[in-house]
Image (cartoon, rainbow, N blue to C red; front, side):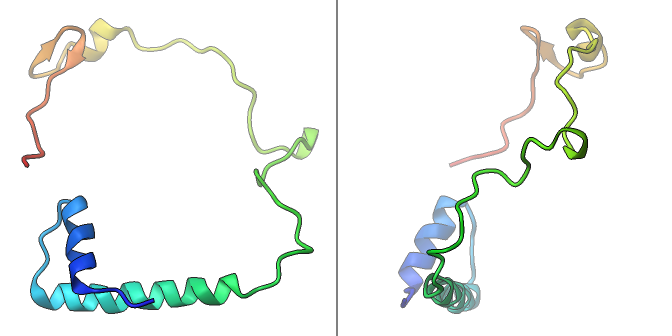
Length: 99
């Protein structure tokens, strides 16, 4: 699949990235290479491979997940005690994304 520099610039804009012209052409080549590998993977016959929705399964003593248990938490007031600018029960932070 041919990736155009226009498509790379579009994706970079969505990710709020500024790329130099050299980076745009390199990214186009890299994206083409990645999609080429995916095309090769799509050629594999996976008809006999069972679908998996989850790697972990019910295996009682061999399961790696612990049971969900309610545990004591830090009260909101204590969490905000040293916040430089708390407000409304939340941490206030400066805006970091400008568009």
